[in-house]
Length: 278
Image (tube, rainbow, N blue to C red; front, side, top):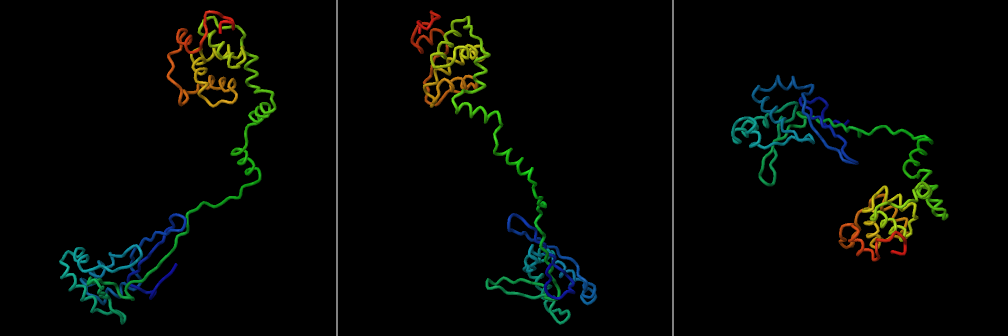
């Protein structure tokens, strides 16, 4: 807390600097009555004291008081010329050897009035930033946070290791084992199974995909496969069917999936159920 000038002032400008952001402080000001106000009030006429109080209401957030006659005229309810006459009377008044009000003429010609050095005191205080207290994290807390942010589930890591070692995806292998080997009874489903097998999908897995996701979805994904940048086409096709991937960019507009349409999209008759028909 800083205090400027005489400690015993009739008026005190209390300026508070509040922390905002990383290194920015926003000031705010409040003018209060000081210890020697009663002494000043006994020595001044009532109307002059009232004019002085109105002057104090023009304090800026930094605690500066320097209004002009037009502004004070609006606050006093009179013209600027009458307000200047009333303020000049305060400038001619003295208290404790100093003028009550001072007149300042700026280079632009504007006149401002400021309280004397013994009339208005200044108190400043800086509010500390409102930051929560820091709590040191323990070893277990650090490890838990690191695992939550960077670690993968164990099952996912084990699956990646098996795939990289050439053993295949365990989930995919389980899907193959649990899939039925019986071909679909409808011709469109049978055609979808044959198209999946031609790409490299296991027959039993192809039957399962057609049964769970539908022949239309499977044939649509086979149509779009050449327009995807897939390294392992069979594995990508399985993931696309299960995830119901959307149409890739650059793919042409295919006709709706049907036996007649897919006779054209995939050359070869559908009427046979053996691979010789492809």
